[in-house]
Length: 308
Image (cartoon, rainbow, N blue to C red; front, side):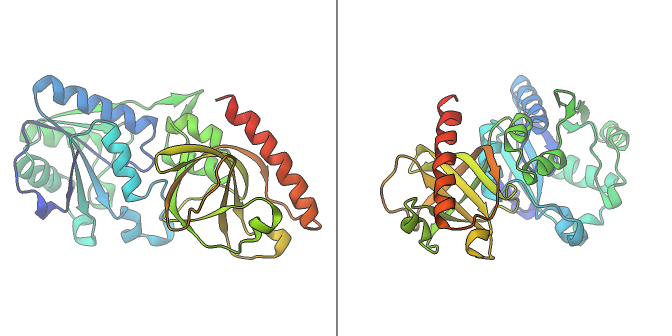
């Protein structure tokens, strides 16, 4: 998959582009349905499947106070787009000047003149351009004027719930990572680097890897059954997210105890997939009570993970 950063970096004409536009935060089942359509159509006409997205997220520029915590890092989103078999990702540098474009001007100058798109596919609720004034109907009008077709991919529902990034964020924030996975089409993952922590886990008999992550959205405070990837090996584990109230730690930490691992992880990259919340975070009367509960957490995690 080719990644193009910024409109000025487009130095070639892609053959018969079939394109979709959006933020694609989460690359969830709804987004995947759009990518599937784009890839299928591109292959049918011998063209190029393109995902046109924005960096940073538009709300981070236009209304930072309303900007959501993103489900993916840029790196994570690119990996997921590549897995969707998209040929090219164009990441437009989103600025206030970019946002001021009128929808018709964007469709004509960018989609038609610069990219020469043949077909454009968007989600059922898509809006674009200055003040989100561009509707699907106006995009279709621009398509008729410029000679490209516009298709709409309907909403994807799971058990009666319309799949959306906002619903997924709420589920993850509430610790319902197993329910979020049904809408994502995969387990929610944090990626990061193992760093030094307080080393308290070693003294308690449960040495943990402390994760520093660039992911913005953390699962709700609590303890989770997880799987962690270390050097392309997936290992079962238990993760704790929170402020460690038993020790009045204060700062938020992500600690992962790997069930069958003995080694030094400091400075190494780790991906952690969250399978199911075991319990919420709570304060224990002393370290012994905490250790007793962690033993129970580990046994419960083993049962959950061995059944998958």
